[in-house]
Length: 182
Image (tube, rainbow, N blue to C red; front, side, top):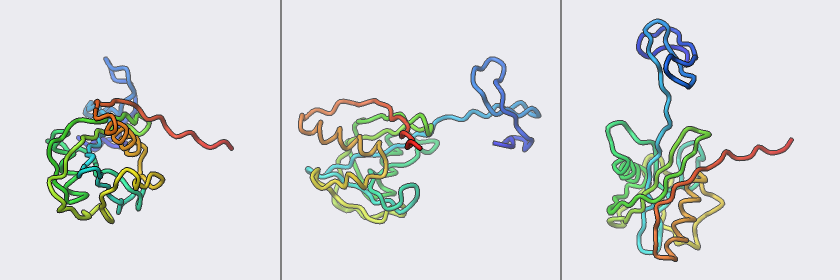
């Protein structure tokens, strides 16, 4: 950040009085610019023994498969964001949302939240951010072509929990990928 969004003057990075973190601060109007994690909300849309996945039409990870999910918008609940993203990416309507995974991704300042959900019908199609959408049985999941580790982890948990007929709410963190040795 270089300029204040309130007055347009240059900002400096410092620890404001009464704070303990480095922040961007406008020395002209005294606005403190807080930067907080983004919430990604999505669903595990289920139809019988299959899960609906979307092949991404956008970066990052163009062409890879994912659960329908995206950034939460101001003015909506996490559940509303998950349902909206499912509708936008897969043109799919879901019901009976149940909180399932909460995965912290601190190295990119995100929290990914997925809900188990039931597809209302089979009237789905690729939305603007998807190349295609498709139902997959567990044996057919394209594991090596999944876009994000949080999606892979959520699906691993889902299929394991389904075998046990129990779906606990899971909360975990994803560490950054290790850099290759040089």
